[in-house]
Image 1: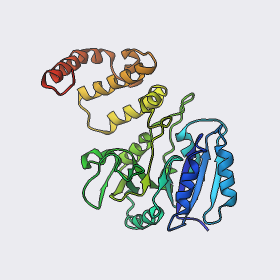
Image 2: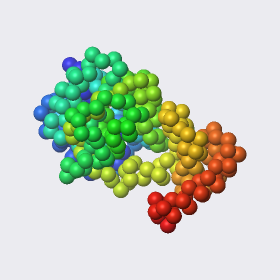
Image 3: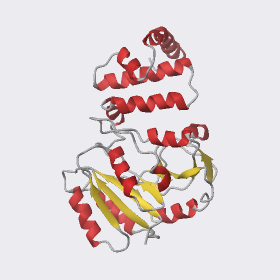
Image 4: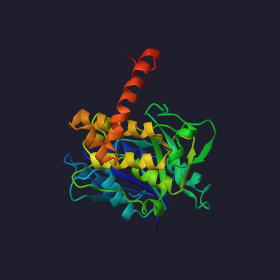
Length: 303
């Protein structure tokens, strides 16, 4: 029997933490879900542990797949979305866990938008293991807006999105040769740009613990080491959101600064990657310098 929710977990070298997520799934008040795991060529026995869990579990189905070579979380999501059997697609990272009522609340809240074709899914805040909110949120029980409108509603920080599987299948993550990281915002923003909303719900169902070797903790390094995907994300942002002339330059400069932290590059390189005129960038450089001087004089930028 097909389950309502596919809990999808991309897995890479998390043998020590995977049991914690598994235990949180066994404590669910509702078992109307499948657990789909995609191992991205782990070398620590994570894949073998996942297959052991699948063999012994009888309360909910566990399916384990493995990529042919390590390609990053976004490629694992593409594989998972292609074979997911659930009506809803819920990405839960291997070092995180769910509250006992998470699946119950996901199913209940989805019913409130089921007959609304303008919705791509629902979203929840994340909290740390002590229950402290990560990021910020609004004060009402729920808010309807696209992912591109989040800031306007004070929806900031990592969230737990649950998409309709039929929607996520329509928006595969771009894949660049030689790169193994791509911000999920690339796809979430595309979904939003096409007019799909999310019902953001003020209930915590997802608990996370950022690991020292995790994607979030190495955010800037991952962006710098995957310049094509990073450039795509920023170009989309400039095209999808209102953006002044200086804001566009500032985005290009931010790309240059981040990439240059880890891999030496020039401002010309950044301009070429983001399709931005080099001459315009040099014209804006004195403006940036003046803004920083003024910021220091007024105390807005530390000296």
